[in-house]
Image (cartoon, rainbow, N blue to C red; front, top):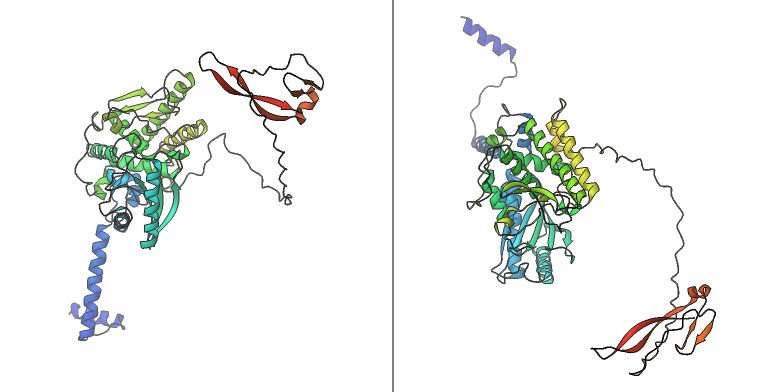
Length: 486
């Protein structure tokens, strides 16, 4: 029979095939353990945002899928928030609570995004209290975190007097990831608006258009790659880039004009990675966005040069182009919708005050627009690697400095001897000034001091004298007067 012949050929061609033997109890336990581990690995792969097929996705969609946060990163975010809350209750009181805001509350966080937290204590410390009280609370929290948890490391302390809201910046480290945690004190910001209110407005707007969230994620990622997302360095903040994306989608009728009128009350929904990447914007839509930003920036520069009104910009409530306040020194204006609902005008782009950095930002937007419209576009290089091209006109060749011998230490100059300040005159005596036109080294008897030639002024010593002068209303007052003694 042909079947028997085929079985015989297989048996001959596979001389290393072993015969089946009955399994022992140890072998059965080992097999069950391997099967359970395989099932757990399959479950973990199914939970990852990168799991699944990339068929039908654009190049931007495939890159965005690789940037979405993993399950381990989200667990680390929750663990960092739990440890900060536990330490704050020990350091600041049992009724202290820790709440998140920013990209975590918006639902626009990616792998490696920062975690923004603020502390609400039983005493309700906020910006209405002094700057020193907030700094004191942050120092107490820092000491408790160092004592109780070894996974936190202090990266920066922004406790200076000119900082409106003091911030403690920490690094939370685990065996897989590193997370930056920004902690502030108080439920209100520097203008009295509740923290997180604008984030809930944005979260409500993102649910009204399928392309809104993917576009915000891509633009924020591009700004981070290009190092254009730090407001304290003169660029636009992540909040400003998010509001610009929503303004662009309203212009293109992809979102309703009143998308940011009502805040979201429900918690952040679980994002579907496949659906999110399928609704990714096209290259043409992204290039139109950067084109809009460059056009708005050019209008803002022309308005700033005219010195007629405040900085030119946009508003989302209502949706229109507008100007900021005349006293605002920024080059661009983006109105905060949360402050607008409270009747306050706040510029989200208030950090853009350096002209060269603003021009560099606009050049980067023009370069991104041209790259998206070119045939050699690569989404991985566009969103995952920093552009190495220097803007035209700013490339400079810097020579390596030659080693120089150490300079001798400068000895401090001796301090001049202190001059004796004459006693004030009695009331009723008015000190007369020296007569004009007196030259040479001679003494004015009425003034009681020496007058020097022009060549002797460099060696003269300045002293302070007082004279009594009679005022019409205030009476006798002692007024300081500077004289020169040779």
